[in-house]
Image (cartoon, rainbow, N blue to C red):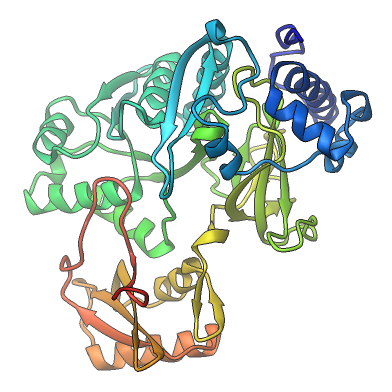
Length: 434
């Protein structure tokens, strides 16, 4: 069976919700036909569900389609979900994953073009364009981050400074010598670099005004700390994942009311991860995405495991693109502690309200004599003076009141918890170690 022709729908940004809805309908119908014709995986999955492409006539029919998961990508290794001939693939990217084989995604030339086009919107929405200098401190290689950030930066007309992660000596040298005004990195790297320029006494020679960060959750406390360390004006949260092209599928505008996502490239659903039913309007649930133009490895109702909610209020910026909230964690990151389901983001929010501590923390879980114990370590805020014991008691009480579990809390010196140039590891579960 031959694969379908290239997507021929409109490529201009939609001007209103009607145009956006029409574009989504065209894209969904095209994607279903394209995947059914070109992918043996999707064809088998549709047949098992009793679905043929003619059953999908509008976006209202999307719930007839079966879900796709990360396990499907691993089982279909090494070219999962491939829906075009091999000679149409011009690049692959991969995510590391935590178990089993890597998730490899295939890209056609049009996929790369589309990714660069919508990613450049992120820069423009953050006010970045010609005349700006962008220090890109994210991973290059198999990861989508470096290639995506650089190509989109160049498309937006700004100067790309592709330093990559780590190497604080070079980072600091370029911050001073090249005077970039935009920094792209993880929040952990932003914190590490911000602390470093202050330690070296070069902050007044650094010109960072805008920070675009992603790949991990960032608490309000950490956000304030990073802004203060750099003397920056804005932190923009950028979202994305390798399966869905890579980073750049959405970003918050300068009003910071939510993440504008590019609904002309994918449909977003929010479901209950247990029942798989849609959550109520504005309810927190798992993101499910369906691509509308992706040729190489289209996604159909892909369960991302990321938790967020849609935001129905209109943004003051006037963008036609809808919004979802910041990523609040992952459904598979949930901690079960003494029978209580806890998401790290819940602890994050509580700690962000305690002014006597800084933004860094760790959660250590152990089992002794058949019982679970949790120790939360928090760093002392060097800008404030307070009684550590009182701070520990306050945090314990807030966690008990809001999450209904008893924990131990210990205040430690600022800078004593580990820092990372990529994503900081904050949960250490040793309950099952021998």
